[in-house]
Amino acid sequence: LGYGGWIDAQLAVPATRQLALLRALPQPNTQADRQSAWFATVLDGRDQLRQRMALALGEIFVVSEVSGLNQYPQALAYYHDLLADDAFGNFRRLMEDVTLSPEMGYYLSMLGNRRSDAAHHIRPDENYARELMQLFTIGLVQLNPDGSVKTDGGGQPIPTYDQPVVEGFAQVYTGWSFGGSAAFEQPSFDWLQPMQPFEAYHDTGAKTLLDGAVVAAGGSARADLAQALDNVFHHPNVGPFIARQLIQRFVSSNPSAAYVRRVAAAFDDDGHGVRGNLGAVVRAVLLDHEARDPPATDSQGKVKEPLLRLTALWRAYDAAAANGRYDIAALGTLLGQAPLQSPSVFNFFRPDYAP
Image 1 (tube, rainbow, N blue to C red):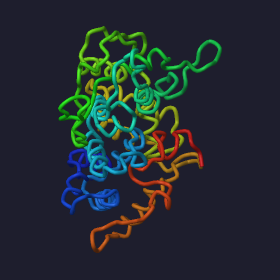
Image 2: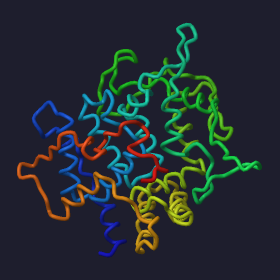
Image 3: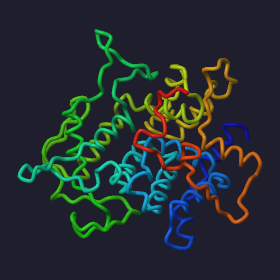
Image 4: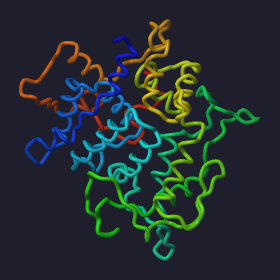
């Protein structure tokens, strides 16, 4: 097929869903069941590139079993499937699906986040407001199209946001609880559908967003959320920020500025006027000459992640579990890495980490 033909074929293959695999097993499920399903999928599934992209996205939009989610393996399977389904779709859709997933809502405190109530000393939680910007989309400082840091007249990095912006987004992310809940304070605990809004708990005041944008007072929870996510999505940092991280996950720990610029350009415009087309971004990452040419220096290429070393070894030798189970006790301890088991929202390693 050639590289481009193989990528096109992979873009068309639908996702292998972990949740369906878990539901086919005897109940109740365990995290070991979910881990086994992950291995079975990445070893034998037809959607190899999609699963590889889901792993990469799961290291950017981090949700982890190392939390109260440990008791809900089907919830983490649902979240993995969300990433796999959106792997080649539009980044704006991915942002919204992640934001409204109860798994992310629980992990970063948007689930049950309430409007300000001075009488009861309640303020909106700022956790998700910070991490969506810092870790998932734009980073802490303004970037040039090639991923280099913009500086002011004194040579200092220019921040992307300040505390009033964090507070504005925190106010946006209020009033959401489990989908299917009878009331805000009577949650359904349904982990397998998006969260739903309860307007009485949503902050309806004006809200400060990025670059001077303001959400007008009186809006609904859904309308405010759409405006806020659009505001982040159209920030010029998103292209180079995501481009660099995806290049690092797939190809090179130290991509050149030109490589980042080319992939960021594909994010900004897929050639048909569409911003955020992740299928086009993946093609740009994998078909770039820096991805295809042999590394010329020892600072090019990347050290393969432990989990990928293991799966690559098994795939190379057509390894398969005779009973269909891939049970490795304490995988995260053995390898320092396991699917959706990051020790924190900062992933197993930071983008600037160097071994």
